[in-house]
Image (cartoon, rainbow, N blue to C red; front, side, top):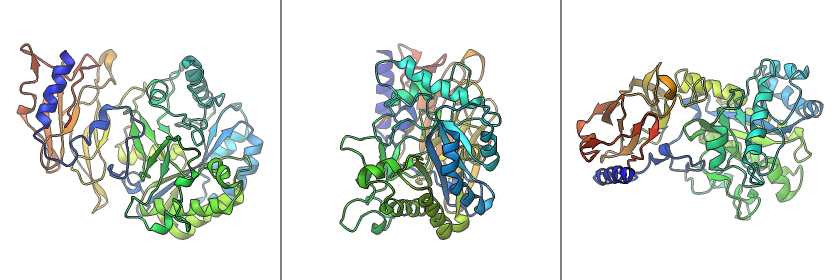
Length: 467
């Protein structure tokens, strides 16, 4: 009854809003891995790359590594081609199991590669067999193993068989990825959800989206009718469950391509080149999945790199996942991260504060209270204060959500927020680039004469702002 009344109060309040989408900030309270779409605010490469003139980020990642020698032989021509750009060879190797002391790993790390995680046992699907402890164990053991490689700190994960089966799930993100391992380690990036560009995006030329026979160029790679591990028309990183960066994967992977029209097919490379062109036009992040299993030649991947460099020059930046995470931390989040040192929340939220179609940043923790507003016209950030903490900052509850709730409450469509806990209370609207307090927002939020909290001693009290 307590939660029901609190939620009803918020619904009644938000009925006064005439914004086109009064629930556009609802994702901040959810753990949905698939909430983004064409209309969701963008996080373009210039917002986080930290390098003037760069508009396209490319992350090349190879899956299933167990045999170092086999991967070295397959990767070497690609590494040599990447080095011709700026002396680096940024590829991420999604690894199952390797000896941490293997000498060649140090050669790769020195060249600019990163070693990332892919579970120890490669189960497909991970949450199969009604054995959750086994699923968490194969994830945790892989993270802890790769942390033992000298000079390597894994930041990213890819779900086994994510391009061929519906293997990711909300439960995986909530109960495995967003937790810590027995050794206290954790990750910050997942790259397991496929992005499908479609003709619904009016900014893109039709020739990049539709084949000569009028078949959709990228949807044709969906492996079966009930495959749903996809988003559409969102070629940007986004946040899942407050703690995980999702780097959507470009379609097709080499597995999807060989299933459709056989191994090493030149159509695969041509379609991947079209995908690169799309991501460049959208100023997005192109994350490619490939394997050394005979589905695509390393020379074809070199050809893809050539295409990106020839057509976009200094506008394209090749990164591994570790470098991408560091640039996001440094250039987007003011040196902060989604997760604190213990793996709990760090008081970071991404939301479109002013309704301009681009994500902004708010940070509220023990070190920083900051609002960062992106100007697409000037390609720069402006900064201001944040009037509350987004996480508890002391005691056993440090890092737990502090109860800030967001919604659209006014005609201008800008963000509003409320919070009431033992340590802080108030309501604010985002107005002319700053938070403006509105004492009326908490008026009436009570039950039997007692205040209704949004968070109480670290526990969510069920208050939401909804249209």
